[in-house]
Length: 296
Picture 1 (tube, rainbow, N blue to C red):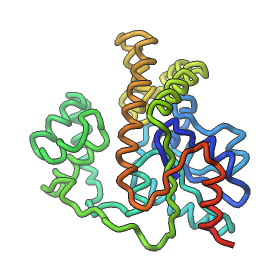
Picture 2 (picture 1 turned 30 degrees about the horizontal axis):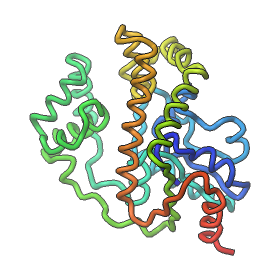
Picture 3 (picture 1 turned 60 degrees about the vertical axis):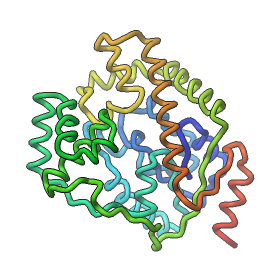
């Protein structure tokens, strides 16, 4: 089950899942420990109702990527099935979900020496130097990767420097994997309604202590270069703390970034074939689809 941020995935799942199910989170930010408010993690009550996996499994200094997500999810699916339960993969990180559905591209493994050299360049000259280097060496990748997407810029440079080939020259699987049977449910709402929910979520995060959470993370020694701290909500508040705007400015930037992210999510998800698109308010319809899929 997938859909854009703030569409209502957690609320729906808490209504329809029972003891037959276990949930595997497909959210690239909820993996990080100490980051609860800004990632809108499920409540303690929701986690008690249905077991949740891939939440709080990484430190904010770690780079949690699609490869690790797929590997961990495959292991969890086997474990959940072994307990006689049904695994439900749910979240909004489109690349994680499509990587699970189709498999990962045939790109080479990371070269440790190449990565360390790129990290040294970033430390000495900043992340803009990485993107400038990508523009020079692999214009194809640079045209498809946003300049502020540090992980994908770094990965594209690693592949280029290790192989002399563009990351996008490697074959991506075109057909869904056949070792799993999938029921694909996509959640969506009218755009104005979704944006209103995003505004409400951002305000709720501030009301629940997002500013204090960022301060606590800084006190723990985490900073803007750490992967976890580059998520929406955290990066805007870090900019504010460096003197770039006010708290109100940060709140508006977070809402704006979240709206843009939701739009990108939907664009990505709409390209996935075989999805049953429903409103999160139609719980009975979703339940019926699940029961039909599971059979007697």
